[in-house]
Length: 378
Ligand SMILES: [Fe+2]
Image (cartoon, rainbow, N blue to C red; front, side, top):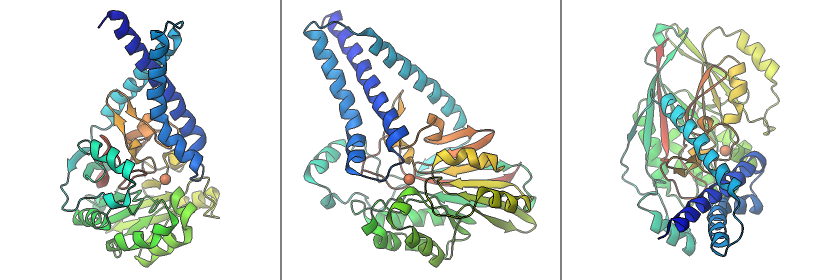
């Protein structure tokens, strides 16, 4: 193969990356907050095929002798370098976290519920598809001002179940059982129980083992609001838990206490409690604060409210993470470190979980996660 063909191929790949990155940026910044619709769905599914098409078109244009447009390739190199820089920083931030894989008895994907073309594609991708894998990511979190009675207090965070008929309910049940087997002192749910309204009852059944979980707290996600907001609020209460809708719960052990601040997404009109009211409430609680939010976009507010550490979901970790490039579609604008794993925001530490469920049954280098924190005196 001649050098000029290799050069044209490399330039075309960079053109494809440029096209895909621009479309992803548009999706994350302008479409991700909108209610699900066919346009949004089609756009998210077409971003990467559009990148491949752009690369092929670029290659074809070079082959038929059209003038070359070098800036596209330079932009592609710039995007890769920018992302690589963030990946190196993320690796450093993720160092305190340890991850271990759990082998599950139940397979997750319910193939019968998928259309034939999707089955074909996903069966081809099954060697790299982690949609029904499970990791526990854990760390000891040193909390400034924590009373020694709270030392060793365990928190489990589960988010974005997105219960759907193409994932078996036994699989969800087994995930919940593994989370409870960690013997947490507190279980926090990060929202997005389902993607579709008609799956609410199935979700309630698949996740029923959460009933009676110790110190059960939850925030609601965008999909809960778009489907059945009241249903999931009532469900968590029926399970003996509490929904934090711009509200605070106090966890206690012995003389120790920790405030858990649950913030709702700004575009979800679920609460009438203002931030000023919440701030006034927090002022009467002189103890360390942990933030829980559904979308990482709310990290900034959690930091402003004095949280030392915040947990979020919503992005599913991007679902497909490519080597040297990181996340692809992620439904959230912002720095890569707020799309998955450990990050920092205004001096506050953050962790954005990959979540449990998925928008579509494909995860690459991004397995479902149970987040397990053990508190330590800072
Ligand atoms: Fe979400």
